[in-house]
Image (cartoon, rainbow, N blue to C red):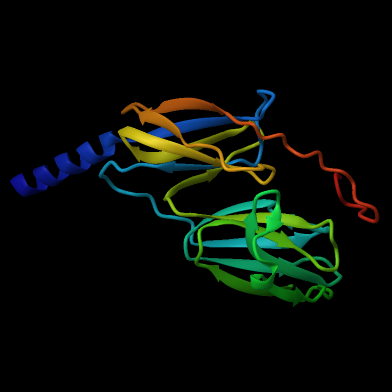
Amino acid sequence: MRAFLGTLLMLAAAAAQAADLTVTVLDRNGKPLADAVVLVDSAVQGPRPAMVMEASVAQEKLRFVPTVTVVGLGAKVSFNNLDTWDHHVILGLMGAGGVYVDPGQNTQFRLAGRVGNKPPSSDSKVLNQPGAYLLGCHIHGSMRGHIYVADTPWAKLGGEDGKAVLQGLPEGPAKVRIWHPDQLVDGAPTEVKVAANGSAVSISTQIAPARKKRPAGDPYFGG
């Protein structure tokens, strides 16, 4: 009985130490920055949440959906072509300025257009290198998407309001990193302190989100 009570107390203590951190990311004009990837690093001992190890990206209406996907290191990502015309998938690590680090090392494959009610063409890849990946299509140059492979279990995609809630952080010091598809350089990490009852922080960046222009011949873009 004592051992059982001791276990309950230990679990309760561990639960009490885990807290949430709400991060609001702002662009260079002080406005909420959508599609920002928030990553938190903590050296404090304690349980870690499970990473996202499977995800799916669709090619639909000349877009990659979702535009930004966040997964853990070693995750399996499936690609599905829901359009009735063929698409390529160009997948490679992304460098500064929104270009491929080494185009010669990119993974490329073609997915046939969907026919009737048949299952869509699909393929999957395992991503074993951390960082940002750029998605493209040889046939439709306007198609761009991103996958971020996180090297920390606390990784979340922010919403349109620029907010991301990271759950299950141990109480104590931590560092917050921000990544965004439109950033030119990596920003310095922001030091924060996670309180037992949760914390919130706003992080200003120098990122200017690119305006999404309607590409010629793309009837779906911006719709």
